[in-house]
Length: 471
Image (cartoon, rainbow, N blue to C red; front, side, top):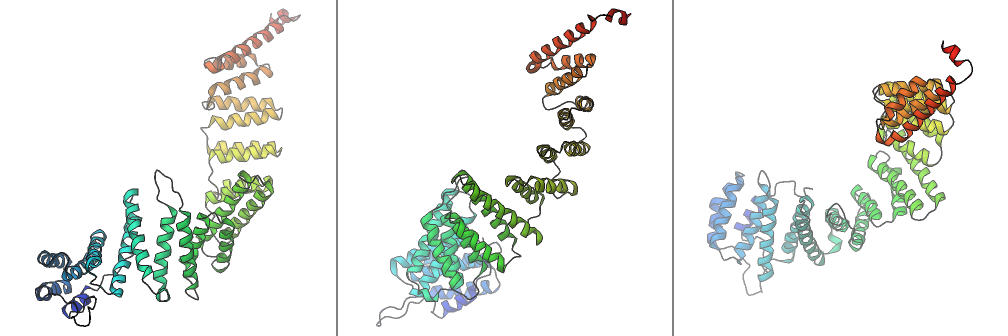
């Protein structure tokens, strides 16, 4: 978040310094205005001015340090040099914001001791301190350093605002204050967690509202901040109402559509889990569906993830036929990620609607997309078995084990043994049961199956005429 994007006019400051007009507090009527010493003016004129005009900022800093080494540390000259030094640091090809902030801190410390600066110049020192500290705090990853920077930014901001005429504030001023209070109000992330400072967020909201009233056409950033602040304060209904108003004016804003859909989902979750109000949760889920579909008509929120979210919402509100329709179409045209899990969900959904043949067709299409998956063949076998089409089930369980079986191979082998046994194909049943017995988890069930097969075979052999048939 770069708050200082343009080179700063150091040349103008140098001209003011040489004219004795660098920011300084007029003393009592019987005293002369504060001015730089002659030695300091000579160095500025002979070295600093030419170097700054040539944009040799490293040399400017060396020359300013030469002056600082000679003048008293708490002198008026030092106070002015730190301002010039701050400007030079920000004009470097790679601006040194940290060093610039330190320069302003030293300048302010000198003035706090001797009160060299007039009100206007003091204010113009406090503002960049607040900006730079805020900027550095937003970029550091160290929570302790971040807190220190934000504290410095807040101190300078509060001190500046105490001395400012509120009617003179620009939109930039208001935005700085609103953004700083909002950022600090969000809390510092520590170990992946952030705790909202509710009081600070309320303070931010006041400044945000001030920004919304500051112009006939407020900056969009104030609306964005207000929406986010309302959510941080858990004022979700106000948040979605404002979002709806903003989308009426700016339907092309993708971010607003994302926020609105997320808000309705969060409200639905709160209604269900905290309020235990299924009717209210249903209404918010429906609003989320409508929001997604409105956005998609405008070309937004149509990623595979968004499309899958829409399918999930239709399942949630009990519109299974519509959910299946969207999921089926999306899997086939790429609008939804054609993962195995999504194909399985579609097949399962058709089963829940008693559309077993469509479930089989879906799984067979999935098997074409994932030809090495034995799990899909196992599920096809399961569906056929539920339809009392055991021969078809046996055919697919054979394909399943040929592909390596399921995630738990013993389960497929036991199912194979069961199907073959039921169809009186005892040799296949025996082979399958013996394979299942190799897995400790299935050993007991496999042994029972082998006993059942053996008993059935003996029963056949003991029937009258069996021996003759055997001869």
